[in-house]
Image (cartoon, rainbow, N blue to C red):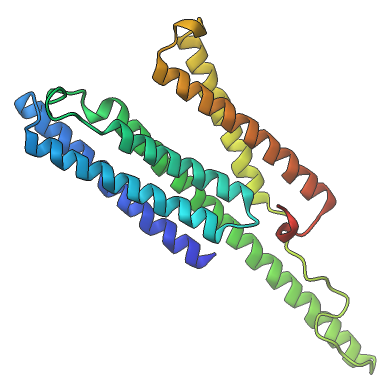
Length: 239
């Protein structure tokens, strides 16, 4: 988990750098009212960098988070936002020299990706803390049993009477609940902005579909995790 935390920290730093690059592009646009052809070519390189970062982020989820479905979901959402930012930043050097600025759609997608990474980091830190506390409690229990058996003249066995179990993941449960609440609020805001779904712009329609998909998946994960906590099943068995 420490290795994963370090990987996500580096990804976050690179995402922050790309966010600053977006702001720099918009400064150039504001100064001259249009991008030069060279700047639009630089934007293409920027989009490739953002796409590459999304692929690395999604690789972390598939490679390092197997058996931790909540963490896989939040990192997957970060990768998707990065891909969206990359796609929205593409410009035609002949027809889009004057805009729209990246602050309109690209920057919000980048900030959402960064927010997901931060949510992951905070939850992972809490998860690591819970595991450390559980390990310490287990060690204390083993020491107490060993001392008691020694006093009674009984043979000692490491871990006697204990089970090698991971504790219920409260960190993941809290992350899911917060995510579920956030997705619900965003869905309500979008519905209020476009009460007639037939008149909803295409980009907003795609956003609504993604929100609905995320809500379904988060709801399913929440039910699984609540059931897991109820049965006190080892987290490693949760698929």
